[in-house]
Image: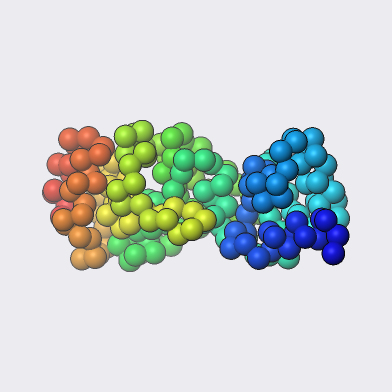
Amino acid sequence: MSNITKKILKLAISKKSVFTADELALAWKITNKNVLRVMINRSTKSNILKKIRRGIYSLNEKDVNVFELACKLKKRSYISFETVLSKAGIIFQWQDKIFLASNRTSEIKNKYGKFVYRKIPDKALHSNDGIISKGNYFIATEERALCDKVYKDGISYFDDLSGIDRKKILPIAKLYNKRLEKDIRKII
């Protein structure tokens, strides 16, 4: 088995569908940046790796997990807002975008979808309260997503808040500011 085949096999058996250049260097045990660049270029030219964006790749035959990709496109981000709320049935509106909480507001569009990153306070962003690790990406609980949404957009209409745990949401709301705490108390 050739050296490159062994390296690609290592990626194929991993549970990841998206890799950063740093993750490829770690998996392939390459410390020299030039050697890494050559390996990545050869792998993309031979259609083994697919370049998604500068520094982000996937295996050509492997389906890309869009939640994993969304969190890799922007470091320090997690799936939240309408994406989590509609998945949990708290809002019924269909969303064609994936919404994430991040340290900066931006929007990225590619063939995998539209990714909307919304800025939340650093104190809230750095807290793990209400964040679930799914292995390759992070996603907010319904309570955390509701706090993110109300923090950014104020009180709005929610279709079904029966799934919200009132004991869990108040400590999360305290991570943001007093206004959010008051707003959360009003809607629950």
